View (cartoon, rainbow, N blue to C red):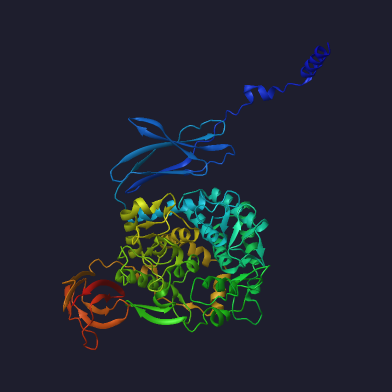
Length: 633
């Protein structure tokens, strides 16, 4: 009886529970599909094809579906996760046509209508197509692989929450390239910039205004870069500010959002306490690090020549926390080794390490800072960077350490991953056979002919191992048949940014348009200089070329053959593998057409040269052609 009563009570209670029809009604289920993906672009290259589109913004987006045309019908090909808005297919040969459509689908399984179809055809590519391929693909690292919360740029592939302040500055510039090239819409770029700026202003740890090298992309908290490096990093901060100031000039419209972008950037810029990192009001130097826990424990003065030039320029330019302009010469350029004034492989290097050091010295400070047509008391830095690049290439051609694969189109020593870790590679003192594509590609404004030739070689020769979803991988070493699987923000950023400066001057123009920059240059003492620009030194002279030298190898003499478009004075010099000039073989006028000059294997003292590799340069109207020969005894 008691059991029956209990069942009765339970039955009454169940009847009294209200039934919410919206929970059970089929009408409440999500039946609204996402929007059809927009701006779908198909790109055919030589060895692969890409399809890119603007990413959807629905909160319940699950991903995308790719349809490929087969036998006249579009059939499902593959899914793409929502974090990505592209697909790549390896084809391998030219002349292959494909046709695609894209849809979006949500968590409920609703699928959008298909996009319009796009056609891709693999084909022999022009130089412009190669440049766009690299920029478009590299952009994905800074757009699709950016941190989902902060929008900042991850340190490297697989670093998850670790984002980098300097690499994010490079990434801000890449964002501008993406808008300008149509990889994303301006509105998409505006929204991402606001995400980044609000995070930097409200969540990111700052140390007297400076950002840490690494920070957590979700929380904004500092992630120590090393034992004592858990505070402000002034150099990484300067890379960030260089990018932000470039963006401040780019987002110049009168909309509420773009006004907010400019105001937020100004707020960040004006709250960096550059003068704090002077350590003392009597110091002529800036210091790299300060930690709230360890103070000035690292004690690293910024003294050139290296990648920190932009740090001094911005510190002097600051409208709120500036340092005196004399720190440029009395601090940054104070080293006795700063003004080197040496010639290597026929190229004058005014400032820098012997042979120039790693090539990133010519990149990081110059993504926004346009060094063309100006000079300080030492040099025109654009021309110095051009010669630095050409020396780096000439060293790889000479290849004094005999590494596998080095040559006219496989060159570029800089900081990158290698088979044994990570290192700042440079000629002689730190050359283990590792080539980084970022070295040649980021030098595009300085050496477009040589850099484009290297780009083509990297793609055509090493595509299967060196190319991936974010463009060229970090590095390779043919001595041990090693190819990196990694992508690193500070290597990818200069590639897309410097290619854009070569193509349009966009980032240079926007950074230099900031009113603080001309005033800073005047205070330091930079003056106009018309010595060089991209166009000045890169006028093609189709009929000026080296035919070669024969015999090669040779003993005791060899004849160098070259052509000129018109009669003109030519200088021919011979160098050993150390880059030392051993003989000026000719310094006279040669006729138009084919010319020959013979070297008898002796140096400027008339002594017989030793067996080995020698390098010769032919200078004509400001241009230099190079050749390599081997003396065997």
